[in-house]
Image 1 (cartoon, rainbow, N blue to C red):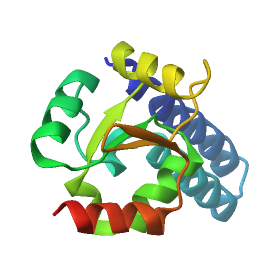
Image 2: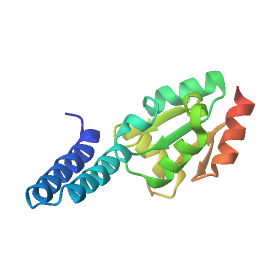
Image 3: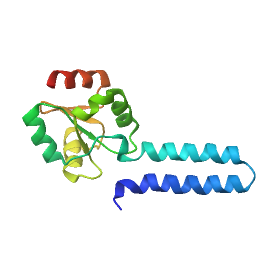
Image 4: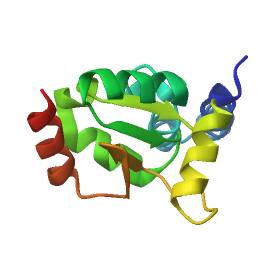
Length: 145
């Protein structure tokens, strides 16, 4: 199993155990609510909400060829999720790099952020932008298309 799936799986297992305990204790409505909360946490922490992640070197190569921005992200990051949701269908036009799966991506983010792995870091035309406004990123995607 890939490490990126461990956290979502733990949320599902923990939520299932808590819901089972509540259900057996006579609180089926509370059990359903707890299970839904943990399922939502698992979804937010999974890589499913994001377009397919590629390696940093491949993303930089593709970005140089097509001019599209590169987004460095990690599962569980609320700011990354905000960016992804605000981009909507435009998100598939960017090159996404999961820094938990790609050491070169993590190194690129650290180099851009004084040693910190602050995400999302969006690279446009070779210039890194840490946690940029989603509206600005939409403009960059529109201008590169």
